[in-house]
Length: 174
Ligand code: ADP
Ligand code: MG
Image (cartoon, rainbow, N blue to C red; front, top):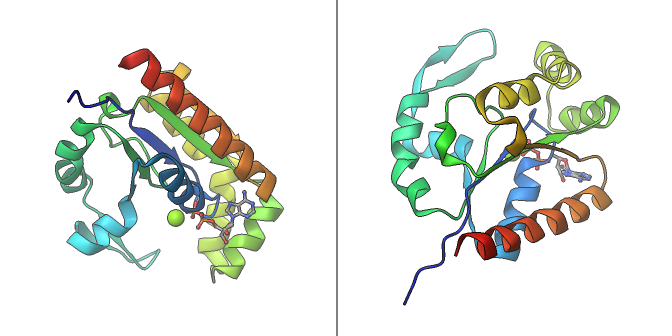
């Protein structure tokens, strides 16, 4: 039996924009495999030092890439991370940068327990569209798409749109 080729999708954006919510639901609907890079790093202790300012471990990007390389080659992966410039460009067929309005994001991060500098820095990250620019630098512009992620209707619309895109990609590539 011929194995169907399936695309690799990157979901990125500032913490709190809804990557994990979208990624898990998308995996449910499509049968693609959801990978949360933060969780993967935690499980494998793929860290390289500790950031004193933010009080969090620093991701060992090379080890994360090594860890994922074989699985990415199989296709059909949905990767979720709040950064995107250290993944090999060739891994992804499409990149979605989720975007959330400042006030909405502020409330989400506050209810996640973020305060002070950590909260402010993440809001600034979204205001300055840092991750979008990072994605535009790291990948071909035509595969990078912004998705609004403010309310439940956005989630439904984004899911429908990505499911359709996957179906079309599979028709075109199999
Ligand atoms: P991320 O993985 O990007 O940090 P999450 O998926 O954990 O973000 O979502 C952060 C919070 O925002 C969660 O409480 C989630 O339920 C909520 N959320 C995510 N997407 C939406 C949306 N489209 N509309 C309303 N709330 C959302
Ligand atoms: Mg998340």
